Image (tube, rainbow, N blue to C red; front, side):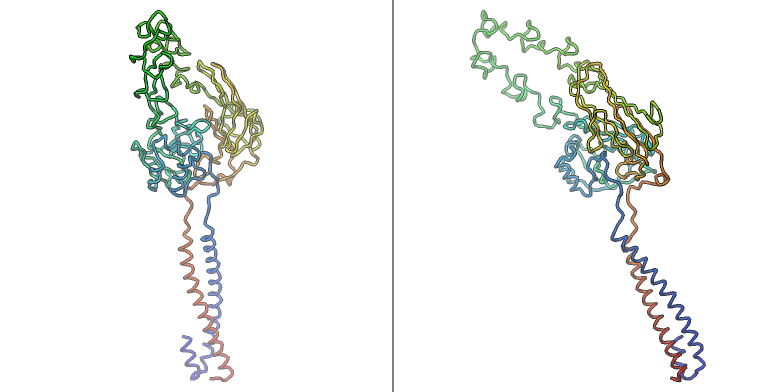
Amino acid sequence: MFEKLLSALPYNPSLVQQLSFYSKRMKRESVVRRTGLIFLVLAFFVQFFAFMSPPQSTVAYSTNDMINGGITSRADAVSACQNDTKSYGTVLRDFGISCAAVASATTVSLSSKDYSNSLYSMGWIPQGQTIKRTGKATQEVGPLNLVGVTAPNTLYGRLLSSFDTYDHSTYKALKVVSSTGKTYFILYDCGNLVAIGQPTPIPPCQYNPELLPGDEKCYPPCAYNQSVPATSPQCFEPCPIPGKSNLPKNSPECVAPCPYNKALPANSPKCFEPCKYNKAVPANSPQCYPPCEYNPSLPSTSPSCKPCDKAVSSVDALACIERHKTATNVTQKIADANNTKANGGDVITYSLTSQNNGKADIKDFIVFENLSDVLDYATVTDAHGGVLDGNGAISWPAETIKAGATITKQVTVTVKNPVPVTPVGTSDGAHFDSFMTNVYGDTVTIELPQPPAKAIQTVAATLPNTGPGTTIAIFGAVVIIASYCFARTRLLYSEALIAVQDNNSGGF
């Protein structure tokens, strides 16, 4: 239209009014397009900064994580296994998983309700039978009996789906197969091991509970030489004659006066070393056995020789400890503060009771309590003789608990005021969940008030993908087109203005 008006102007000067009107319209259009270009450039920079500074998780790792901060690749899991970080390699070995198996694992996407909702996630901290935040049952098992992993490092298993805020959650995980053919998963977020069904470690060696069955030193020991197997040719009753102990007792060369009865030859049926527990039988007789310290009528090796019914062996005295825990809200004068609501500044005293229900004294018993979940919202104001470490665990000096005796330890905490509004963690759904939950035999849970900022928070298993790369490309194209249109409008406006001025001055 502009070109037609401009070409006809020399022959029809009256068209200058239309050209002037067209020039004003082009000027207004230039203003509109300039404004649009400015907003497009601003939007472009917003997307550019979103691309350069992607969103990051705001909550640090939990002490429940088997690998602090989780893993970012399969190599991280292999490294933790080989270096035995936080006993990680030892735990995997107890489930029949080698570091080589981890190195050959594949990355999969795992739903919390896969395998008919039978996935159990393992971690260092007990959660109790219900996750207060979700209200879902954990079906928690533990502490698990692991070889080479002892208190305070104890492992627990609970349903992976119990941490779901909604119907289910999806996790990035390594799929690994154990030496027994069982399938396990290693979660990227926390390194925690996930089993199909309740986690069951490989039972320890029956001859040495510190070893696994496949260990080369797991064998029935020789009764006369504990350093060799019972089936070894070097396992024999030695000749009792001084200087001939390297010979078997039944060797023809082992002949001498009976060292126990000089009136008898050494090869006499009545010449034997008397049992130190019963002089009437030989020392190598099946009737010669050290009596059970809990029942003298039983041998010490009898499965029934144990300090209490819960014990699995004669030395398993710790199984006889019955643990209980209570909490008292001193500020609100609530004797039993379990399942109650505390406010900022409240003083709460936890009492930990350990009762020895067995027949044996337990020496060097350490009362240990993990307060990491409590310390999310409170600080220890009186440890009552306990020592708090950097991982939120408190312990008291070792002491002996007599058979039938009970000891009680206390720790006093003060709820932070104001109550923190830190978001719920993604690797541990019980981290900053507005509940102070911990377990010592009994589960004690104290609810905290939720400020409005906390009440609207939700937990996402993965960070949102805003697509900054694609958006930048689209906005870049739009900015280029808008810049071209703006420049063309400015040019047409300038040409129209020149034409009007020339016509007024008689140029045409």
